[in-house]
Image 1 (tube, rainbow over the protein chains, first blue to last red):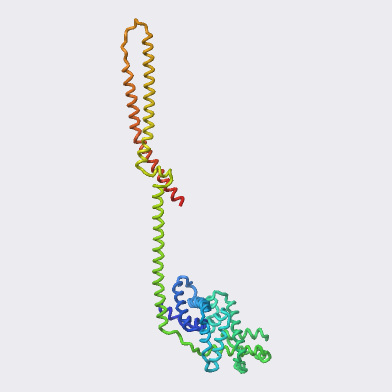
Image 2 (spheres, each protein chain N blue to C red):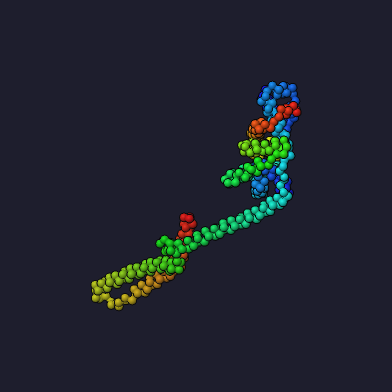
Length: 166
Length: 223
């Protein structure tokens, strides 16, 4: 049990943190996720990989948590946690902007983008985790990228030298 | 190259494939400002995603806390399951007790037809005499019929005797000869009723048994 928690806790924590933008919430949801995992371990299809299944549970728990959080009054505090840190250099500023753009994305886009770019999950694993076709996942990811890129353009985060690199 | 092809290359590159290097693509980027900006934004996105994150990994104690909570949860669920089963068994036992009690009381104080068959001892005493009585009545009827025939025969014999000529030899009146026949008839009726009595008791017991079983069956069927 301990080894399974240790094996997946970093991935689950990273996903929860990216989706919730709050460390304490991410830790609470992580505990909920592993509770659910061990409660419903019998229902896991052993023919399929474990990680997407756990990630799917994590996404669902985060969604539920956000729904509960929306009914609580201290929403401003969460937003402050995301925006309070001042980026030190240009790449950090980019990361900060991407994080902000992520908060404005549709839930499905945010999930797919985080799972692909932060958790390095392939399309098939994301599709398994979300219970959606691979084509849908691909479309969502492409749209998520375009929306984030649009925000980066609006915020003046691109430079003319970019295309010369390649 | 069209903008659509350029977008596909851009997404493929963000998927992790090699960046496009073809002259057509470069030429298109030089000519199309929208695609060029998209390309620049994608490069910025890649750099932003590649930058090291400030977020620290979860603490080592978190795994221990998670395991503790899982074990607590298991213990609670185990007890909850036990309580649930205990509640189910208690409920089942209560239902059985209620059904048993209702059956018992309905037999004692229930509908009239059931009440008649309920007490076994009086039932046995009440049912047997009925057939006994009818046998005794039959015996009495046979006896009275016999005695009536005997009386009439005696009367006829007296008339014949009185009408007979005087020169006939005198014969003493022998009324007592009819009495043994009557006595034996009475004894036969009594013996018959005595012999039938065990059979009537068995029949009454069987009737009571069937009526009881059928009553309980009806009660369960109606529930």
